[in-house]
Structures are given as C-alpha cells and as structure tokens.
Length: 199
Image 1 (cartoon, rainbow, N blue to C red):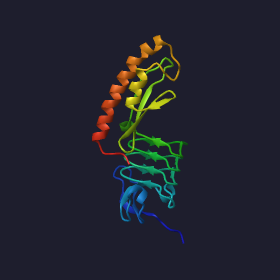
Image 2: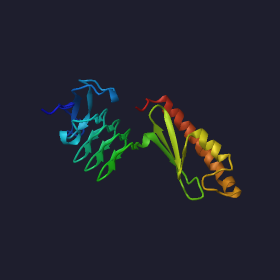
Image 3: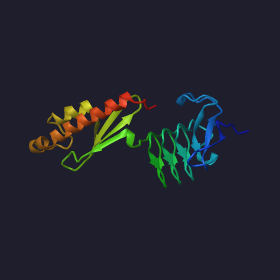
Image 4: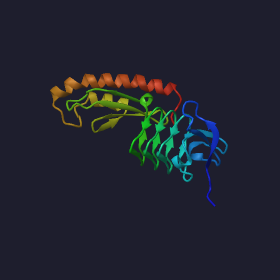
C-alpha cells in the first residue's frame, strides 16, 4: 500500500482556481512541517512527489508538468511551471520563477528578486557583482570566479592580490567600485537581517 505524505484539500487558489492547497499527513522535521499543516499550491498530485521530504509551502505553487521530488523545497511566492524539474536538495525561494524545461537539482538555490542584488560592471573583464541571501541570515557575493562576504570583498579591494592578477593601474581603477558595491551590499544585508529569516 502506498504511503501518502500530503493530500489535496478542497481549497482553491483565489487567482488560479486550477490550483489546490496541500496539507501534510505526516511530520517532516527537515522543514518543521507537522501532520495537519497546510502547504502551498499544486495543480495535481503529479506535481509533487509523495516520497521523500519534497515540500511546497507558503504561497508557492507548482503547475503544468512541473515536478518536485527528493528533498527539494519551494517556498515564498515562488512559481514552478511547465515541464520544470526541482529535485535533490534544491531550494526555490521568494518570488523566483522556474519554468520551461529548466532543471534545478543538487544543492542549487534559486532566489527571487527580493533575495538578490546585482550591480556592475565591477571588473576589467566586465563582470557584474551579485549578492545572494542565504539561509540563517548569511550572504554570498559573486564577481566572476570570486566568491565571498562583504568583509572579504573589502579586504580584496584594498589588497594587491586580485584573482585575475590585475596590474596596479587596473586595481586602482576598480577598487573604488568594489568598495562602493561592498557598502551597498552591507546595507542590503542589514535589511535582510531585519526581515523574516530564510530557512
């Protein structure tokens, strides 16, 4: 006999009536879900696996031929639709949208616009900087092949040891941009710290 971890309720989404809210039938400690807790929205049971800890929460929805499985989680106002696949330990947060034939898997994280900040170019190669919000009020900055925190970006900008081996003139030209981006990132991280924490 097949074990079910969730059921479809009779509650319909107010703006997308083809979607139904799910309700947990078992505890899923990984995400703090208890039997009886409401989840997000799915078009049918074909959208969310009954095995594993895959879960849809909040106002997130899964529709079309999209498929969520493994221990993946879709939360916030995220939308996964068409033939998209989210599996493994992947997470889709905030107002992110995954659609078409996209695959999100492994330890991937997909964030909506409320969880990212991008500016640039910040390097002589034309790289933009992207700040992403991480669970636990953490953050990560990516510029080209470099990744780090706000403090690490400031240290990089004032050092002579840049990953690309830039000459002194190039470092002097781009260091002010990196420091300005670090200050902007610091302000954004402070806003995230005051907001509801990602899980």
